[in-house]
Amino acid sequence: MTKQTILGRRLKEAQEKTARKRQRQLSTQSVDTLQGDTTITESGLKVFARVRPILVEETEALHYGCVDMMEPNVAQMYQPIVRYIGPTWVLNTFELDATFGPEARDEDIYSSQIEPLIDRMLAGKVDRATILAYGQTGSGKTHTVTGIQKNLVTHLFQNSTTDIEISAIEIMGTTAKDLLADGAPLVLRETGKGMAAHNMKFLTASDPSELDSILTVASASRTTAATAKNDTSSRSHLVVQLRREGTAEPAWLLTIVDLAGSERAADSTGHSPEVMRQTIENNKHLASLKACIAAATAGKVAPWRDSLLTRYLRHPLATLDGAVLAACVAPSVVDWSHSLNTLRYAEAFSGRSTSLTGVNGTSTNRKAVVPDKDSKVDFCW
Image (tube, rainbow, N blue to C red):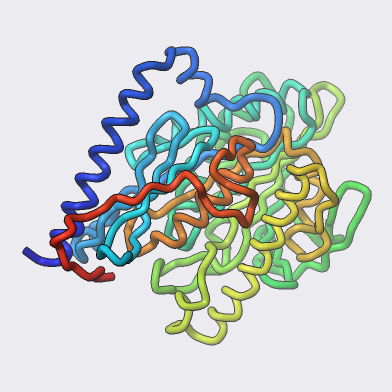
């Protein structure tokens, strides 16, 4: 029996045991409680996690899935470690506002996590709403954002004939480009209503079809490059803003942010110098955004001026009551460190954190899955 087979079997047994325990816990909760946990409420930043399916090439390479989404709102991550007793798994448990497994449909995610927020915005209960997608390269962020947008375009025009104005930019390092103007460079300046550029192009959509076409063009114009994780990895942050002005209906601003993938320096060592530079800049922006959200959540002064991305998002995120963060996770054990970091930050921001001491804290809700004491198997990844 190969090392991979032994470790895979051990992990599967641990996952099945944990799933049975979780099922017993859920059976003692009322249906109302379970349904309530999956629907967004009206206070604070809401966070949900989604794990993508394991890919064919990952299966062929004998990668094992180490992330389980125990619906409705618990995520579990099996962390491989080596102790004096040999190789083992540490089970990390995270409580979020909602979790979705690889079988989840885009429609289900939209109806439970995004639609309530958009309804509040259209009703004038919040004047701005923000949707952010965060996670490592190749974790399914762009897929999740695309699914949200496909459902959003119809929703925004329900019971309304007022035009919607659209802008779309990409931010990379200290530069910004207009994706609706063939990537023309932008010089962003602060105004009374956030940052803007005098030469920024705005398009208008009067129906769902026009809006969908504009969003598709913006996404296709984004800068990409081949990386070890993704042949078309997004190398910038995509920020799309939709706004409706007028007196007949409530005015609102909707911001959709598809963040560049988080990466470690070690993940970029085989890349070109340009891709490595982009990785460094992206990570700086992501760290700055995390610090701002953490400070705003704690009621402290947020360092919005630390990066171009956070300066641009300062106005949309002025209130976190209208914000949703989608934490996208890759299931493979090879990506366990990224998945662990993503879930740690997600739980800290969700306001439900019971296993974190803070944004930089470590999980105390950890349990070792001990292997057979006679087994002498080394980790193979």
